Amino acid sequence: MFGPIRGEWDRQWNGWWGDNPPYHAPVFVLTHHPRDPQPMEGGTTFHFVTDGIEAAFKLAREAAGDGNISIHGGATTVNQYLAAGLIDELRLRIVPITLGAGTRLFDGVPGLNLEQVESRAASTFTHLTYRVVRS
Image (cartoon, rainbow, N blue to C red; front, side):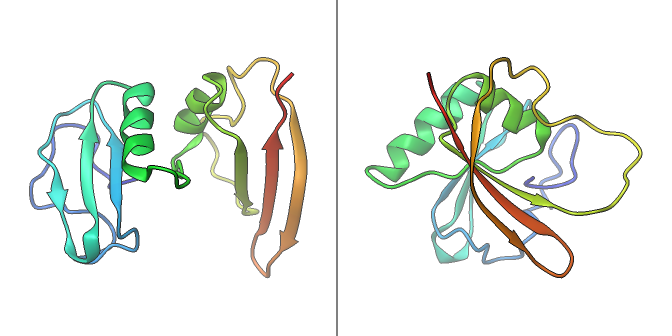
């Protein structure tokens, strides 16, 4: 979700958000292509992690201290974190559009048990919040 690049990094690209991204904290970007950290205005620094979800999770947990961390991404990223048992709460935004193809959410996540916590409708999408129930 850092950018549209699907290969070696284009150093001119600094993310979708301009010079002052909305995060104001360290952000850990999963990638297959190493890149030096990208400091931005407002306290955001993008760190590029090539060692997988567990490494990114550990770095985010250390950076957050006692605070919460948030995992953003597409279905592949979310499925990996769910399968590893590293998500406690799942927030989805459902938008009624047809894309024609893509990765299915929850594929490869055996035994997933979700409890709906909240549902809010907006004019163009619906917010759903689920708690991951562990046995």
